[in-house]
Length: 221
Image: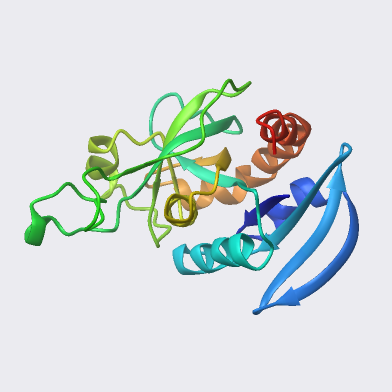
């Protein structure tokens, strides 16, 4: 079974609005929807915002819901020139840009103590969407102060959940598929741009949900 781990209800609705929800219930404080869309069955866990919520929901999906594969989709801020507003990208690598052991280990920002690289590599394969590197941190800010670090990590996108889900997927050996629609560009106007453009990005995401689910199931879930 494919299990989607989604931060916000409005993101989840990009898929649920096109799905037949068979059952809804709460487990460990998280809302869960057993559903099907476009002839494809899935469950969806509404995680909440931030890395801790995302990791907890992903572990719940793996162990309680016995996910064969994880799916994450939602909104993200654009960092690189390729990340155009309202475009949807498939994440190929993810990094936690607010995790830093560099003063202790001399490792690059984002590198876990047991890792040699800051990046989690997601499940590969052919995609209808351009690939992107996602940087995840527990903050949404209109300042451009993070941009030098984000650029040094090769980030195209920034969010608050993706790399935490990738962390769980890596530790549990669970395939992970991740798609992000660009709602704003990181910098001084990002908050206002997010308010103006999130509807456009969510609409684009909703329009791509059939392709997204078919890509996941095309990998043999």
